[in-house]
Length: 308
Ligand SMILES: Nc1nc2c(ncn2[C@@H]2O[C@H](COP(=O)(O)OP(=O)(O)OP(=O)(O)O)[C@@H](O)[C@H]2O)c(=O)[nH]1
Ligand SMILES: [Mg+2]
Image (cartoon, rainbow, N blue to C red; front, side, top):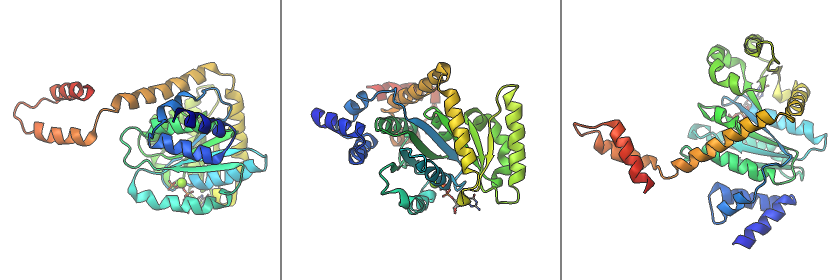
């Protein structure tokens, strides 16, 4: 097994997509060789990771598609990791992505992989981190990671990307105030997609104001209007991404911050490994019936027993 993994790793480094696919499956499902494969990875690979996040249906896949088109003209080698929304309601979206991206499936410069996250308990971001690091071993220039911004995940995802693009659409207008807390912290670039809609200008203006407030005299987060379906604004977006990545290259502090976030996620996943959600619920259902139930005592006891 060990030599098999080593060989797969060599093939992956040489850019063999089949080996890459096999390796991702091993890591995704934690099959034999999983741990030793991860231990062979090198952190200092040159591929840059671009995270694209935003609410369901914001046009993230359409944007990825348009960006692929743009970068292919520059002869870039690109991987796309599309993380399925964990909600079963979004299941159909994946098929949509497949159809739209199908023109790229046979292109030797492009590798596309969807990850199923349903059923993952707390381990989502650690798994994406592992798989992104794995993909980094292959000779790509850019790796695009599309995630649906539901709840905490988009904030976690910021730790793995060198550049995080938050995609919003005019419908999100009213929510802009609530974005302040989480998303302002993680966005390196804002995209107002579906700029063909009448109310796009209002969202654009609000975001510009927020970006200005946040900047406090330093560089403002760029806000770009796009119509992904018409390739409109894509050149500007690609240009901003390039600029951001170039500026960032020599910032050891930022890199340390990102790697600390990644390590934090991995530790969290390791620590939670022994915790079974169903078992927790089952035990709580019994414990809560007792007159003297104390959540804190229960938690301590559960943790002690899980660690054994
Ligand atoms: N009018 C308009 N429609 C767009 C634009 N960009 C994307 N769409 C449409 O919006 C719908 C959703 O696009 P997707 O790219 O699948 O959105 P997504 O954010 O990847 O969706 P999920 O992955 O399901 O969260 C599709 O029907 C697109 O054709 C745009 O700029 N203008
Ligand atoms: Mg999508």
